[in-house]
Image (cartoon, rainbow, N blue to C red; front, side, top):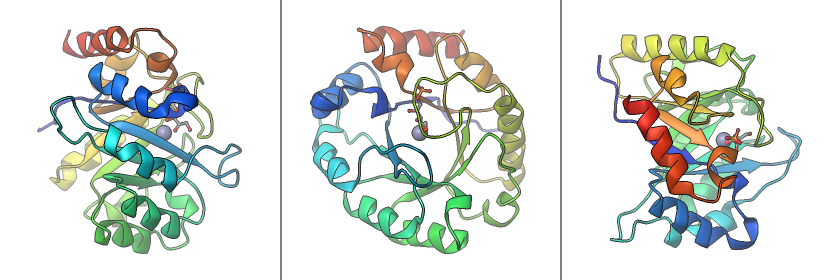
Length: 228
Ligand code: DX5
Ligand code: ZN
């Protein structure tokens, strides 16, 4: 079984919004692999965050010191999906994920994101079943398992997500495709290893990283837990 290299994707939802560009550069310097960009619409979720104009403004900051592009990983918690997804593709997103229950025509949304030149992911809430993958696993690049209810940073990890990660990994393996398996919510240095052992390869962490003064220390602790 081929499990790709682990990726750490800090969620800037917990960053200092008054200094977002600087926060993106600092967390990349601290070792972030992707920038996770949580889009909330006060409709699909009970909170409001930022939109495509902020993504566009941050795009030039999402690179390493030697100029390598760092992927912007957009997590859409919005309904409807398609128009905003297009706007994020234009704003420089690399990966765009959405919740299938937020789209009336899920397959169409997947195709629209791909034809806009982005990788596409499907996101599963804590009580959502993976059944839609029966019909879409051959089309997608990423599966995101929510280990909190979407809408807020700083919540506790929901343990049943581990079982769902195992099931998603089994589906990826059976598909034979190269699909990333991402987990989002309540991830910290002391539980990241359990999430990886269940089969995840990409880890979103907001409050655990931005809630500490030294981002590099937290990211290094996460990598050490993954390597041990
Ligand atoms: C929740 C968001 C998460 C959130 C994670 O709706 O999708 O990405 O920022 O935050 P933590 O790591 O603090 O649970
Ligand atoms: Zn997220």
